[in-house]
Image (cartoon, rainbow, N blue to C red; front, side, top):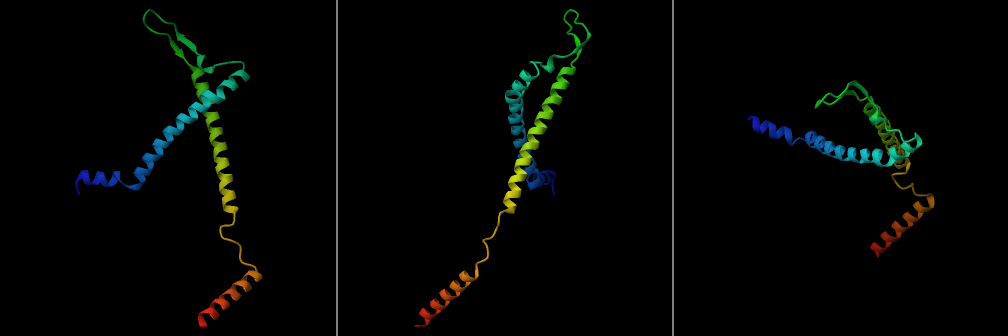
Amino acid sequence: MSILGEFKAFAVKGNVVDMAVGIIIGAAFGKIVSSFVADLVMPPLGILIGGVDFSDLAIVLKAAEGDLPAVTLAYGKFIQTVVDFAIIAFAIFLGIKVINRLKREEEAAPAAPAAPTKDQQLLAEIRDLLKAQQRNE
């Protein structure tokens, strides 16, 4: 088999296609989560902590000289990223928890209808006997 044929067989395997779809959906979901954190969670959180923006925190290691920018240790951006991660992880945890609860409720629901009662069984037998008599007449 040629290298092109091998690549084609590899590329159209279900696992590769499933992985590609997962990556694309994951990237789109990442944008939703980022917007959720930046636009919905962080503004109220910023008010609660007094409007502190961690991303501006930095230590200047070497001051700017002429056209050269300052060399800084931007630890605030790291802190902000950790806070964002914690919020995203908690939001995903809550989402998974809701999904798991829905799955448990779905599994707990009876899949098949309940067994017929004795009365229903007797009525079904009578119905079948009447049908049989009508065919014989």
